[in-house]
Length: 306
Image 1: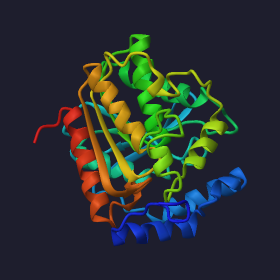
Image 2 (image 1 turned 30 degrees about the vertical axis):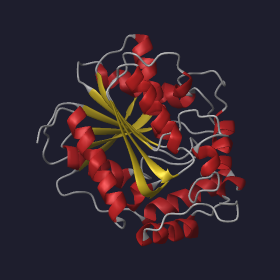
Image 3 (image 1 turned 180 degrees about the horizontal axis):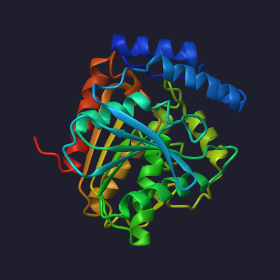
Image 4 (image 1 turned 120 degrees about the vertical axis):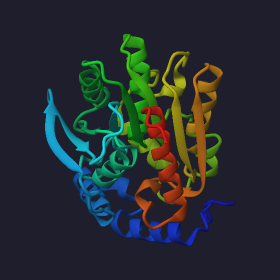
């Protein structure tokens, strides 16, 4: 296909989802001022907001300087904690942008979830983001609790990097990592970066923009987990990606690298999905199946049976 006809999914509900997204967050959003990008993104997320599951209790607090939101579902089925790190290219997103997603994951799994409001670029460049998430992780693990790391997009990058950072710091207790269309440091020119360069919802140029804003050193394996010389000793991983997404092959390559290192890794390519499909889980059958599979995988890593 030429650049005038980028690959597109055919599922009608996903095409409708893309139209709605474009109405709130234009395809050239990264060219706008940061404040405008955040306003557009917040409005987009609010469009897909949902009521909290019945019995869900949320509480905003801080761990050190980092704002967090705790989610406690009506039925707790495991003492393992879930740490959620939101996406948004390290530039946009907040506790509120992923509020409904976090509430539904906590409810589905039956586990307490802690969502992290890490500092955003460009006001705060690398390593502020990983430092905030690591501070929260260290606190959650301090009393002997186990943790499953979860992140989407930029949050998937941060979650994968945290697992490496924790391993290299001798920090134990992470029992799983669930990475949703993660950005893991691929080369930006081959595979899905070329095939899906003009994909709807996220382009390869967008990925390059977010990397530039973050200002992480090019050889930092916490920022770019695919560069890590060894993935031995990392926690089991569940990696789910969107087929129509330049980041798709990052997830595939990482799953392969993990398996080669002896780490249990499940990889799932959602065939009709686009980047940010979590938001479409209540309008697209494909997204709903992907979300259910994600929650089931998290439950398994958290030790929830049945």
